[in-house]
Image (cartoon, rainbow, N blue to C red; front, side):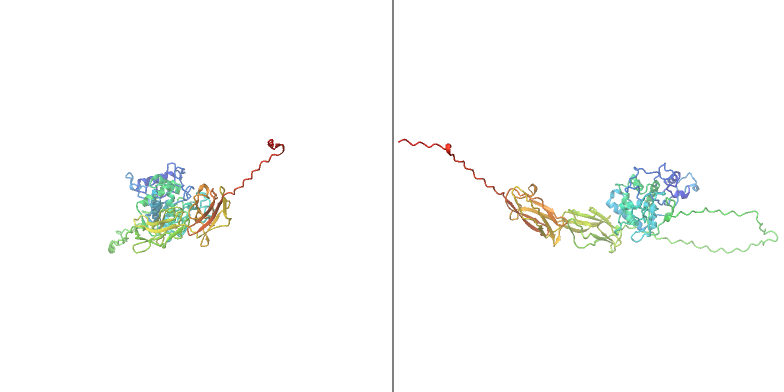
Length: 600
């Protein structure tokens, strides 16, 4: 096997036999562990069935199965005492254990953040490093600015179906500059449609940028952890990598780098990382065809025995038999020992440097119900000298009995400090419950005391309640009040939406709830109603009841708003009974006969 074939696996161009031989050599050596491709992988990758991986994006892969770099790290030849050393298969490569500083920091920060929010995923940063290597050569060797954004865009080929997937434009060219087809973008090579779902703002600059290594590494980690994967399990690890690019050779190459980085790596300055030279589509950097190297020519041997004979020093006419004086041998120079490079100090995680968290937000944190807080809890991560520390993961947690939440409905959020060492919690939004609560800020991975922020949610207020128009409210017993009742709430002259107004049907004095007479449905005499966006409430139908008299409809609101509306219940008017008709007096023959006078 040639060194070239042993070092690189080309998608769609390497025969199954060559791939199998390369993998066998790797498995026998001290090389990073690789997963051998299926035996039916002849002439390229076999199709991955639905059972092999579940892609979170639904489009088959995060990258659109775009090409990737395949150069493997330095590998030792396998130990095989049955072969002479000259015939051992040689698998070599450049020394690429160094990872650019910003790129390494982004991978480690993503691991810390995701382990704090999704510990069951068990995401190792070396997996992100393996994917970042085969996708972009660690952001083109760490060519990023101070915020982690690539100095020039990193774009995959046009996904127009010619040799690659056919994916029509999904972002209007916003990320990839192509309004016809999509292209993989950035150091982790996300296609725009996948970035729209998984994009992150990991460096807290207010943008979700696939060209930023911090944003891209965080998004890649979350994508790999999707579907409740546990990356400590080999099956879930394989599924996660295949969901990124559905290729068995891609899986093998990423696993090779993953294991390589797990055995040790170190930080190198940004821009000095070793760039890969071979891509799975057979093209090199900037999509240029790879240069070919001419075979070295062997110089022809000099002729011997047919040239002009050299003169014999022992024959007449030849040179003197006396040997010329020899030049004195110059003294040997002492060997020069190259200066020893100082060892690279181990990278200290940013969290370890933090001596304290200083509160940046000042003043009380207050909001009324169902509204956003105008200020967010903000802290600065400082070292022992008071200098800010970049890249520290800060966890904010809401504790208390209110229903206040961060944007998105969560009670916890992890934010990474920016260049000034500052991390601000997401916007707080109050719910319907009033009361006090606390937001605690802690350094992820440290046992330091929390920095606490006290916050309060108060009820919305109205200083005035007034009935809008309408006739006096009156009804007879056993009927209903036919007039509608609508009340407007204002606060300092402005409409007061969202105010809770208490409505009580009270006795004539207006001091206590009545025990008879008018009521709302089902005998209810006390209600709490909320004003609408125009500061209005409309009372439900009022039943007069069966007890005549005077009553009061009393309304109160937080902030001093108060109103009383009189209710009058009357008994129905009695209808007079008609006079009885006298019976007619009998007359004529019907009259009784007079008694005869007694005889004399």
